[in-house]
Length: 322
Image 1 (tube, rainbow, N blue to C red):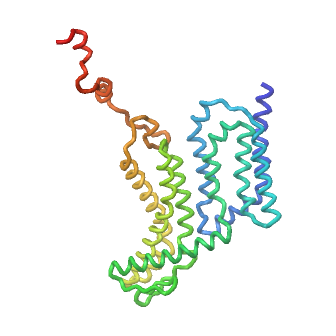
Image 2: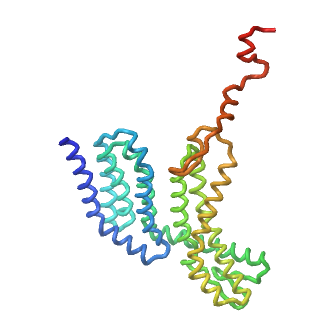
Image 3: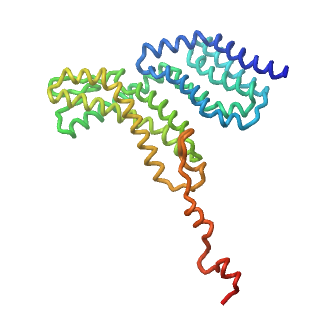
């Protein structure tokens, strides 16, 4: 009883100490979530991580946990990253060290079993950390060019007079500037988080299905951004300048997320039917806590009674051969 009391005290005290140590950094990230539209999904990330832990609670209850000092190695890595970030003023290292710290804490308190239970939530927390400045600029520039070229081609294909000048699309007398904020980087990061969330919620033994969902965040983000810019260009071409401005800056940001969800669900629907899987329950892709169809009794009996052609049935063998 005394050992359990100390263990529960550690479970409460150690996370509190870590929260206190990382609180200034978490506050800075929260300020970035509030000010930068590209990382407005940051508030959703910790909440989903907690929900994912709750959804996996059945897996945690079915196994025994044992504290392990091997977690101190992960905590040492976290400390090294944190010090590197503070010394070299590279805050991304310091922020990402929180993930290693949580992983080490899970091993110390519950062993490798606790880490296997919690690692999806810990990895998902990486989406709340803003990208390094150089990485963000590099990705933003490439996405700007792709969005501008693809949107211009789409407008021309749809019969609208559109000309590209750098990252600007000329439609009649209107100039649609695909600036850094409209490059689609925010959509890319958000859709990566969304696709990863869908992949983690999907219970299947097919690893390629999860990987395909996560990787598909790239084309989904690009297509969604091209649709937004193309729709804006069509409105400018129809003389609806005021409506085009509202769509481009305000409404489109809210419409792209449902569009991305619909595209991901459609992808799951298609991928589940492209590959033939066995009838074992673990091989059927489904979401947490959702019932899965089971084969009917008639179908099961047919399988059990199946035999190769030419093999005598049990009744015939019992009565003797002819």
